[in-house]
Image (cartoon, rainbow, N blue to C red; front, side, top):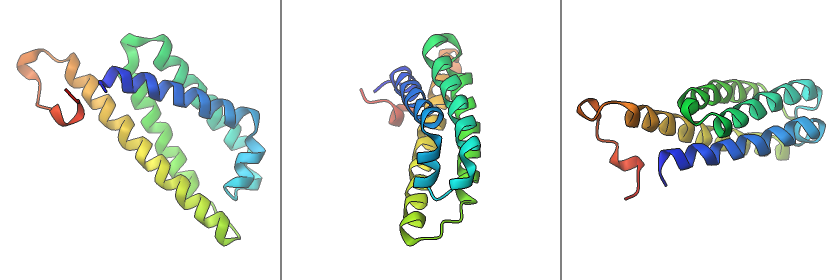
Length: 134
């Protein structure tokens, strides 16, 4: 998959996650063991909707929107790291969410870097062939 295609997929992911976080923030917060943080989850949902809309509506600014997502991922990781679930199942769900957000962060960073690389003049590009299937 090419970096532009990955960026579009990440935009769609942002819209789906943002919709979930804004429509049912209480359920998501309870699922993660963070019952008292419904407003924060809703705010994070708004951020995801903005990032998804930016990635899909502004193709020329995808790199900037991806870095915006990376900053949001850092907030998500920090918030998840502070969740104190009272049950073993809640702690496991939180750990799984941390692993998932970490993987998505890696995808965001690699895609942003690949798009930045593609925007450089050919003489200044580094070989990032591992990121692109040919």
